[in-house]
Length: 344
Image (spheres, rainbow, N blue to C red):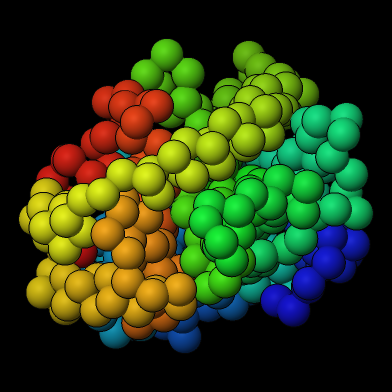
């Protein structure tokens, strides 16, 4: 995606939604062909990579194994499992089709939120003094299944130390097909290097996110109201979180020792560990002996480590965000990002 302004982002989301259709089917109504295409109610569609992943999830088959099986054997396996009523849940599936490709398979009874509605809700939650014209698009990715958007407000820019400006806003990670909960984080961007930090939005030691709700018991508006509450809380916390980050620059530490301890706790691989240690010595403003050096190494690797998985990159950005707030917020949900055992 090439959108660089808010208006361009909105147009691309609207265009994608205009090209998308949904239909409902039972698992037994699906048939995978030897060609790798999928029939639904007799109509034949190609499967996008996201659609193949969704089909593997539907039959509870590990995706790595599923992708390794030849198409003819994959069809035999898939169709046999689709016919087993006690194995497949849900009973009714929402089949999402875009440009004649199946891009998603999800539980038809669970509500889904259009990406345009998610973005508009985040904008509606902005404080009155923040204008949409002041927003900058830092990252925008839209796939058949996922919206990833990181935005900052020019009004928030804070100088941590001479020449080191950081601005803040929101990061939104939304499953277009509803395969995962919608997550909103505080996003802080160090302007000299474009390194990004993700800070979870928490309340009462619980990380807040928007889970899909049963459409027979809840309405889409209730989901959007929950999303609005989380976004509003995130917007309201920006200045406090930036100030907490600036306060860390005054504390002297041993950055490499701290970083190596974090690497050990997160159980990161040797290659990732080497990249992080190298990043510690690559600060655009020169090496530093404050907590900011550790935060920057994690955020640099998460932001620019294109050879790493998206999951790991985001984890590193979250780890940097959690460290940026450790003097003011230490809830179990946030600390588990660093101190729980993780593998990559």
